[in-house]
Length: 217
Image (cartoon, rainbow, N blue to C red):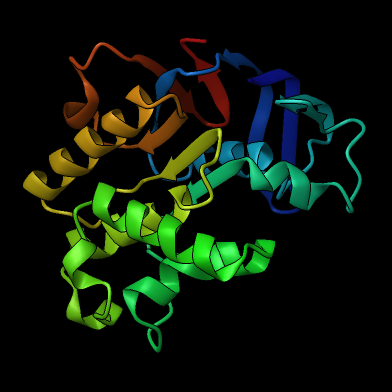
């Protein structure tokens, strides 16, 4: 499903990731742990083809960084959902409209958009908040809204980049449990975090990245 083969990426000012070798199987839920600046976000951007490795290869489903073209990247991203730490919700649109954005971009018909958005909001427990603006939601609710937007297109892979970074412990636990529920439905999940206490003891594989180098692969 996801495979890194000796993949490296360096920024102009240094840092990046070095010689990554790891495989995440279809249907797996894995945690990526490491301190701020360790390379977690870079690794996820490589999976999303937002970055292309300087050396080595990243394979996501049927797509490979060595052969993918700019025109094919939207197709690759269609199968990948992204959950961000800072939500990235549009403040002038309500929760329903924010969740529907990916479907409009992909050209889904109106009736299917309504059905998918309602299903996604129900799954994350926000079905009664569809008319609310982001500013009217708590931090935990905004993060669940971000999750609804990521799963509404029914991706094969879900990437969660520090999704609990701005949440209190209770909301953090609830979000991880929600991700586990989505994983049980068949979605492959990679969640990045710097909070080891949150993810330990959950029976999931933990990949540790430090200074751009991956351990536990």
